[in-house]
Length: 179
Image 1 (tube, rainbow, N blue to C red):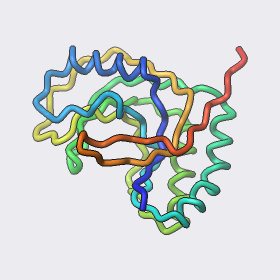
Image 2 (cartoon, rainbow, N blue to C red):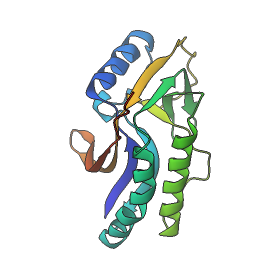
Image 3 (cartoon, helix red, strand yellow):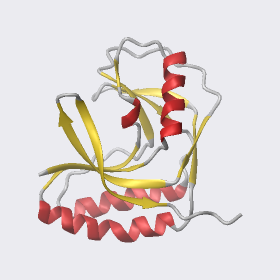
């Protein structure tokens, strides 16, 4: 069994910039998520066996290929908030591009077609910054943090003695825009 998710990838440069911002602006007493694990989840798959993994890989190709043909995607993150139940403090964007919502919903439908449970909440692209959040922190002032997305990946979540590591199983590059 593999624990999987599909996510938009952040470049190492953007991850480091976000981490520097977090260290400078968010002095919070919660568990820091390692900057190497920053990503934007599109669909959480969870534990899946090899048979369903093969089926999933086939099912997700069409929506992903349609998405990547539209080129790179820029997201502007403008606020922080907390998911209360999983106790996660995150960075999010108010304006969600329609093509991103469409992809997330199509991936969710493909997972459901294999009998894989999917959260019923509306899709919210976000970058998790802290775990084990015990209170609602004061919201920092954020002008806008722009992130350009040029790839997405199917990841396997691996727990090690040094923490959780996300291993890409397959990566898709977004098409270059000819401007």
